[in-house]
Image (cartoon, rainbow, N blue to C red):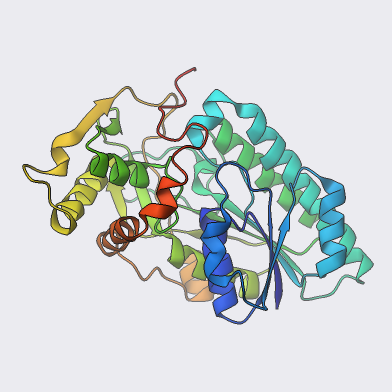
Length: 349
């Protein structure tokens, strides 16, 4: 199978690229190489005869048409997106242009190609999205997001992803484009760009800096190891039912405070300080505007229809993640000078 992956130099996209190549798929990685993209994320497969790279922006329809015509993919896995909530608060325009207009361009380029090829039955457009489109949950373990949960986005990022989800469904209903959709919980793991919570905590801890925790740290997220997510995404693009959406969760709910405490405990074991614990560096800061209280995924559909469950507990995944950052200082050092990295963003609201 030849897979066109958009955003394949990003965090989740590169995990998909690496796994797909390892499983023998031909992969075309289309990425604009914005501040959050890095070809070092896919260096391990760059020399494979199964891998090709195309630097292109999903806002450029002509470039997309050229890529489709040149590579003739069997399926599309659309991950390219602006994804940092704090950045969306400071500059929502980039999120509207990339996540909404860019997805529109991808849908139209894919539809044009699909029609030119005679509407092959096996073609799929897999749109990868987030559980943030559903808004916030109450502090009740019995209440979780299902695929039928009404959309209620609270940030510019979430609203842009909700809009893109709606476009994908409309292209299925209106034009018959064969689509599948997934909405995932919070990802973490190797190659996570150092502006998100877990890498920020790891790298600040190692540098002796404060570990910022929004509000009281009570906000709850369901944590999904990125390599588990990549496995689920490849399963959905191959076996998911057309027009169907699947929620992908890690089945690992933790409050932000609990998560940071766990990262600190792992660091205490792997690289102990001369005195005290890394937890001594924890600092509570003003909460993010519109900060959702809780996300949690009900994974019943993907479990019952496709037989998928995550393999990694958050404790196992965090141990692997911390070790990866300890072993790959050259990777994260090179990214720390990029725009906005290491700064508190999203305070302009």
